[in-house]
Amino acid sequence: MTDGLSVRDLAFSYGSKDALKGVSFDLPRGRFCALLGPNGAGKSTLVSLLTRLLVSPGGEISIAGQDLRRTPGRALARLGVVFQQPTLDLDLTVRQNLSYFAALHGLPRNGLPARIEAALRRLDMAERADEKVRALNGGHRRRTELARALLHEPQVLLLDEPTVGLDAASRAGIVAHVHDLAEQGLCVLWTTHLTDEVRDTDHLLVLHRGGILAEGSTGDIRGEQSLSDWFLQKTGGNA
Ligand SMILES: Nc1ncnc2c1ncn2[C@@H]1O[C@H](COP(=O)(O)OP(=O)(O)OP(=O)(O)O)[C@@H](O)[C@H]1O
Image 1: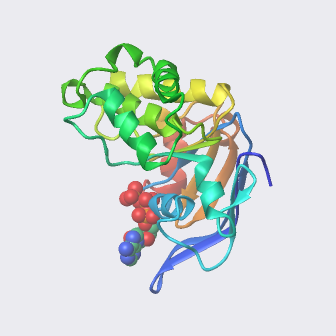
Image 2: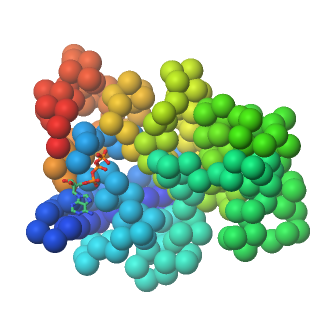
């Protein structure tokens, strides 16, 4: 077990369809881990189990030392999540969206403005705090969601294909910001099916047909090949 995210023997089936088959990994704090898998590999199922949208019959998940099955409230309090589908209220300002989230999560009102300011600063969004989300471009909307996911100061950050629908420049910006967060001590799990979002120095978990196909530093895993060629050769780009 680590101080970040630990997953042990996690399995899940939809009826007779095995979506995850005994997945285990340990990610310490301060690590950026890319979870790469082709469509249908089991990424969304894993994200749903980590966020308790689904509950697995067996296996263990520990978030910053808290067991998700035994102490779900404490475990989820240590987890920040950015889901694939945006969930901001377009007609509220950036600050109002964060305040709303804070109220929903029962964060103390005392010190809330400073907490919001700090979260927005981490994502270079402080100067846009009073703009309506509708007026922001896709990259800034995603950064707002990231700031919101950090409001309760989680130790583990989970992002489910967070760059879907963004242009190249916005994607690069989000990738860079999230790497900074890992350097500041967060344990980051970033799911993607895009090899170009993964850096050679990133820790890489490759999920294929519900199991871990490879784990280690990206540079070591791809060897002399490009990651894209390695991935296509090993998975055919298909689940
Ligand atoms: N509700 C469901 N009922 C039956 N099978 C499902 C259901 N949801 C997912 N599956 C199957 O489980 C497997 C894993 O799916 P999952 O959505 O977790 O993969 P994924 O890696 O997230 O793919 P994608 O990138 O396409 O979302 C796939 O074979 C998928 O068809």
